Image 1 (cartoon, one colour):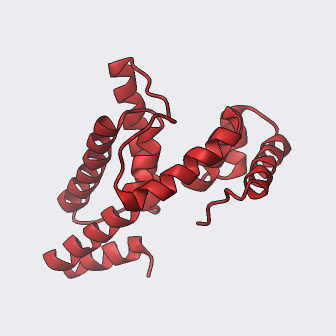
Image 2 (cartoon, one colour):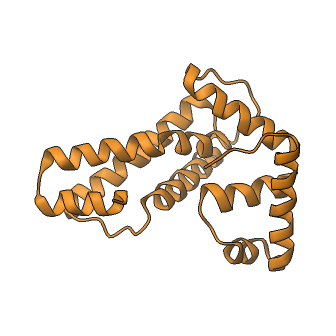
Image 3 (cartoon, one colour):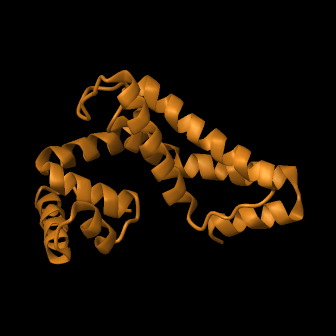
Length: 174
């Protein structure tokens, strides 16, 4: 069952335990992804704060309305975290490099290391297209419109980035 359907079901049953269980599942499923996005803009401390705030805000909205009208929770949280990170970055006016050494828990370290290694091999445009398509689940048409580039150009840039990653054996499986 998709997580959105699980949440709707728990809310419909009006079971606090089931709702809390689904919230915990959502948090555990998307926390690392949220951190990955926030860390592209902010340091670790601010990233944790932004990610936690996004989850709390999402949970409060759902609990207040006693329903979830969001069709794709992953995309909603990713967009919220990205927007909040950019807003925080503007407030701080202090860009932290994505490749800065950050102290992670051991189990997170390998994923982050692979992502950093992959991004070191890619151009900024390739990084952007990979992030938008894989992480934020945007279509190539949406990315094309956003970048004001032809659709085939976006697709070929994406394909070129994937081939680079495969040649270097850096490909991350979903």
